[in-house]
Structure formats: C-alpha cells, structure tokens
Length: 269
Image (tube, rainbow, N blue to C red; front, side, top):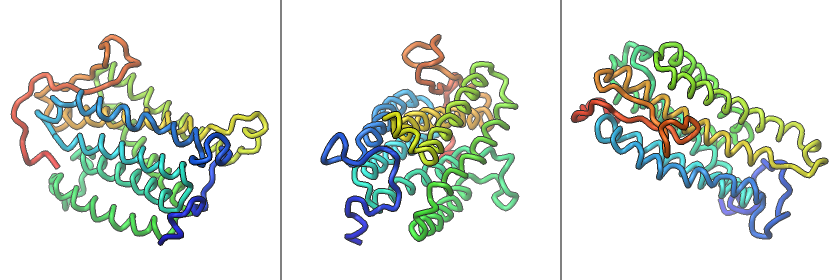
C-alpha cells in the first residue's frame, strides 16, 4: 500500500514535463488547472439555494462531489501516485452515478423500479461499489472506461433537448455538448500526439481538458436539474437564469423555481 502512495507510482504520465516548474509538483499546469473545481461549486451551492429548498436538497451532493474530483485530480497530478490516480477516477465515477440516480427521467425507469427514485439510488450505490472494486483492480483501463460514460450522458442530454420548449435552455444544451466534445478532443490529442505538442513547447492540452470538462460537467448538471423539475414538478415552473447578469448567457447558469412550495420528501434522495 505504501508503495502506491509514492510519487510516480502511477502507470499514467501525461504530456506535461514532470517537475519542470516546481520541485514539489510533478505536473504544475495540470495541477493548478483544477482550480475551477474549487471556485465554482460554492457559488453554485449559493445559487441553487431555492432549488434545494423547494425541490431537492441532494443537488448539493453533486457540487460537493465536483470539489472532490478537483481535489483528487490536483493530488494525482501533483504526485503522479497510483493512489492519486485511483482517487481521481473514482471521484469521477461517483459523480456520474450520483447524477444518474438523481436525474434519470422516470419514463426510462425499468418496470421493477415502479417509478421509485430511492430504489434507483440504492441500485446505483451498489453498482458504484462494484465498479469501484473493478477500477481498483484494473487501473490502466480506467480512463478509457470512464470516458465511455460520457456516451450515455450525452445521449440523454440530446434526447431531453429534443423535448425542451425553452430556446434559452436549448442554446445552453448545444453549448454544453460543444464544450464536452472539445474537452474530449483535448484529452485524446494530449495522449496521442504528445511529441507534437512537446515540439512546440505546449504540452498543456490536458490542463485545458480540466477547464473545459468542468464547464461541460457543471453545465450538464444544471441542465438535468432543469429537466428533472420540468418532468416531475412542471407546475413549479423552473427557469434558467445566469449569474452575475441574467441577460449575459455566458455567465454561470443556475435554476430557480418560479412557484415554490414545500418539497415532497419522497422525491429527494
């Protein structure tokens, strides 16, 4: 176990040169590029106060998990340890599974769930535990396995966008998908064309991936939060807004409940 905590014990090493900027941080840019994972979630927790109070307080779990992802990723890139790699990948897995349990539309529920989101949450937790064990056993394949989770996530996003009637939500969905694809492109070219980036002294595409994937991730969670209210509580009339100015659509999106009332405890997980 102690050997897995050692610096450089991970089989994964990204394109950025190790210890080229700081003698204490293996991949400096890849480490500090996780800063958005720390800065934005507290803002989102504040902006989603009304949503959490009127609809589902479990939304805050997702914002906290994003912070865990940022912390784990920063630790991994700072040390390149196997434990850091596993923590980074497991944090991403749990964000996916928590969002799945919270936002999967009930029309897609298997019949045996009978529309019960709490039961879905229990099955998702069990699946997460099993997958955690598999990820620990086969760390070399983890990154590619986790990337495949983006496929069903984007599929659900496009299916929900085809149902949405609000142009503002639709535009945000298209921007989210574009940023997600651009992020994955940066991840792939960092892995496959490292020599080319080193030749121009810019081995930082993985750092750009961190920035883009955070933007895509939190934007997708905002969208699915909107879809969730629209499906299960349409009478509450969810609205997409932006901070700091509502007329600036490149700001931070969030959801407000226009007609709030006391939440139904059976819907929260």
